[in-house]
Image 1 (cartoon, rainbow, N blue to C red):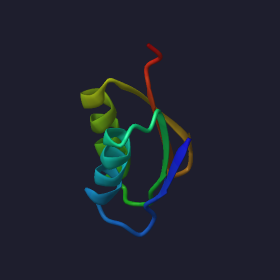
Image 2: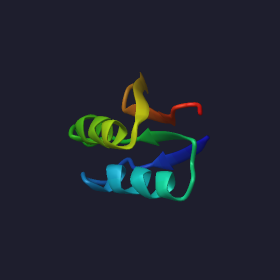
Image 3: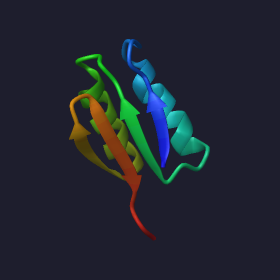
Amino acid sequence: MTRIDARGLRCPWPALRAGRALREGAEAIEVAADDPAAERELRALAASTGCAFRSVGAGVYRLERAAA
C-alpha cells in the first residue's frame, strides 16, 4: 500500500501525486487530503485508470487496481 500525505496541498496536487504513484506501478494507494475538491478529482482519476475508489475515513481515499 502506497500512502500519500497530501494534506495542505491544493488540487490538483493530490490527484497528480496519486497518478504518479499509479504510473510507477503502485497497486493500491491511500491518499490523505484536506482540499474539498480532492475527492472529486481522485474519483475521476480512479475512473480514468480503471481503479476502484472508496472513501475510508474523513479526508482519506483509497484507489486500488483491479485484480487481473
